[in-house]
Image (tube, rainbow, N blue to C red; front, side):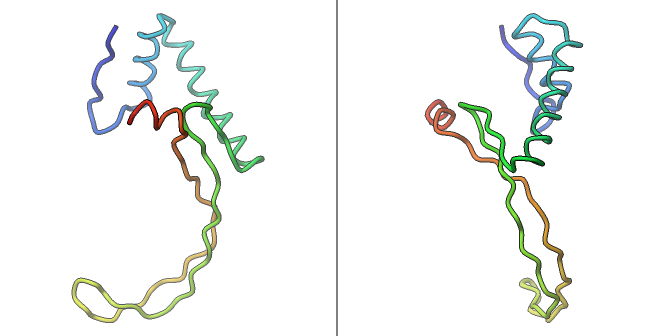
Length: 106
């Protein structure tokens, strides 16, 4: 069985659901419920444990981005001075491919 190519640069959620339903020969409704539940589980794990690993595929972690003070900078294109706005500290999700995925792709 082959799956359809994505219409855009990446597969949308509906395209992923359709592809998984085709590969597993399950109902699209059931597959959509599983994908939605997986997304909710990942968000829950990232909120509590700050990490989530889908073994053999990827590891998602939360990184803390530091705050940035306001100041003066320089526009790299024109060379004119410009004001840099302050930025509050926040949490950013980061993804990393695990060794099993790297070995398959390489």
